[in-house]
Image (cartoon, rainbow, N blue to C red):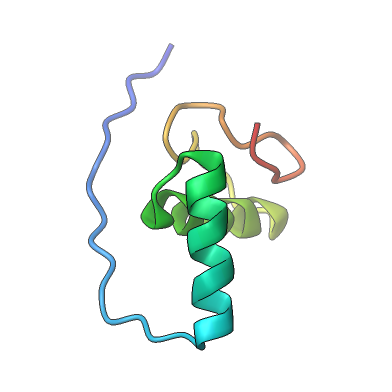
Length: 70
C-alpha cells in the first residue's frame, strides 16, 4: 500500500452571486461539511470525470472510478 501524504490548499478570493452562496451554505450546514470540503470534493469529482487519476481528495479511494464521491 502506497503512503499518501496530505497537503493543505488555501482557497481565497472567491466571489459568487448571493443565490449560489446561500445554496452552498445550506448544503454545508445540511451535510456537516465545510464550504472548502464541498468545493474541493466537487473539484476532485470533476477532475476524475475528466480521466485524471489520483488517490483521493480527503482519503485514498474516496473518489471512485467514475468520478463520484463515496
